[in-house]
Every structure is written in structure tokens, then in C-alpha cells.
Image (cartoon, rainbow, N blue to C red; front, side, top):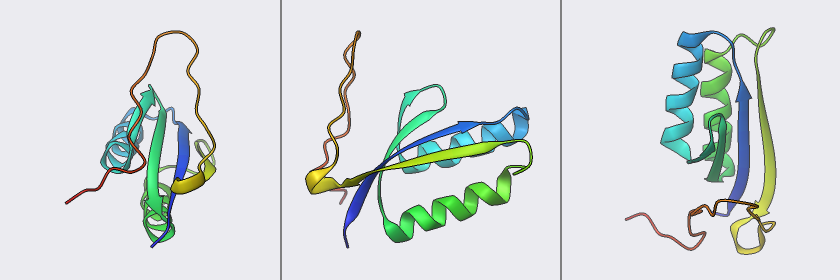
Length: 95
């Protein structure tokens, strides 16, 4: 199953909904900034995460941005300016 690297970011004002979405994101990716996550997901996992998140947030007052960076084998490069960050290895295997 092909995995894609995605950048996910959210803007949520309600503290309770914010905590719930943050937990979902932490379960599915690596935090890069306060509300920005890097996720390596299959298309099914991404659809599941989107469904979970949309069930939590108020779509009239909050938003999630998902940017598909492509398949892991050819994902768009990510550069860091300033303090170096350790990004997840796209070749890592979870056993």
C-alpha cells in the first residue's frame, strides 16, 4: 500500500476541540510546529484521519489544511531554515 507524506495544519479556537484534534494528529504524525504535523499515511489512513477530525471540529469556525507532498519514495523535499529539525525517516518501518 503506497504511503504519502502530507503536511497537516489546523486553526481551531475552541480549546476542547483543539486538544482532541491535537491528540489525533499526534497519533498519526510528527509535530513540526504548534499546529503543524508531518504525516506519512496510506490513502486509507488519511481518509480515516480526515473523517475523525471532521467529526471533532466545527467546520463553520475551524479548518484543517492538508498538503500532499507525494509518495514517500519521491516526496517533495523539506528544508528547514534556522534551527535544525529531525524529520521522520521516510524509510522507517513500524513493526
